[in-house]
Length: 438
Image (cartoon, rainbow, N blue to C red; front, top):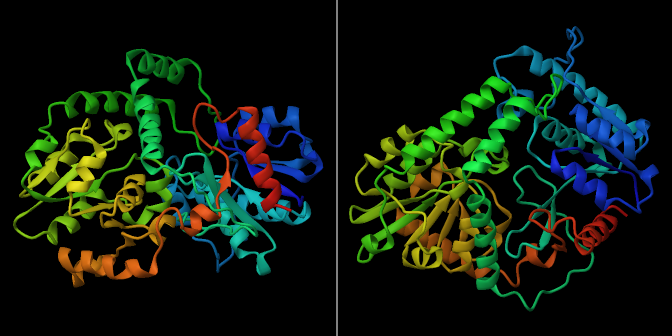
């Protein structure tokens, strides 16, 4: 196996540390910005194999005039860096040279990491700038359906992925069962968010701070407590918003817009240029015929993250409704004319149910029938019927889920869920890394 570098990121640090047991530690390197995780890695790996990047800046007198990485874009996508502070630009520019030197000096061929925080996105861009594919940045992530398969994505949108030399066709995939399993996973997450969960989270915010002062992903304790209180208020107020059940739409024509959890990678990074959901909803509403309704489906994990004024503003428009959360997903989608989202898993589900599914961002599942990326120009040039006609025309060149390239090129293994640290899962993930990094 060639030299690889892992970017530390919360629980993924401990997961990859477990995955790499048995792998030659001389070939494993780390980039870390959090002090606690740095100390954890120091106990497991050689210090010389770890690049620590605390947020310490000096004045930049030798800043390149032709900086080849969009530093401001990276700051904008990061949920903790203030885009009004010049220190953040200085920190990233200084980190860039350190990361470049580390990768070159250690002869690293593959970097494995998330695409959530600024250091990860910066490193991704550094790898992209290396000539002749000398260094490849890989973002292992679940394909969601099924949950126990991952792809090694190699672009910022998670629309392109590493192809395997040997693909294996999966014949026993049961879509409905997989769909129920994923829904169950989401339900379990939200079921656990009871009063005790929020009390424990508040206590951790006040007394057990994970972040240190030099961690670039640190958000001040005051800001996090304020956000926590506002979220609880929004959750309380959300229950008073008028919502419709499926019966209300029994004899009505409608399209669905799936909202997504925010902040999260899917909106902050992959959907960076489409993260104004009011504008997205408004664009969908503009193309609807007079007899059509627009149904807003909120993500269960996102309730409380949006201000109530957001919902009130969009619900003022004619024939726009917020849906109750306990509605059967399949029944809802099958009755709809089309669905829209930035890049939601719900859009993947919709396309598998043979319902036209449009995403604003590029997605790996756009290769499926009934799935298509749309742009602002598409809204200008098309109405709802011509958009649906266009997606159906493109279907003859596309595959279904079982025959999709992304499923054929996926690897066995789970990257999220309760049993990710099981011996069998760690072995599967270890084998997949050995395969792609050989």
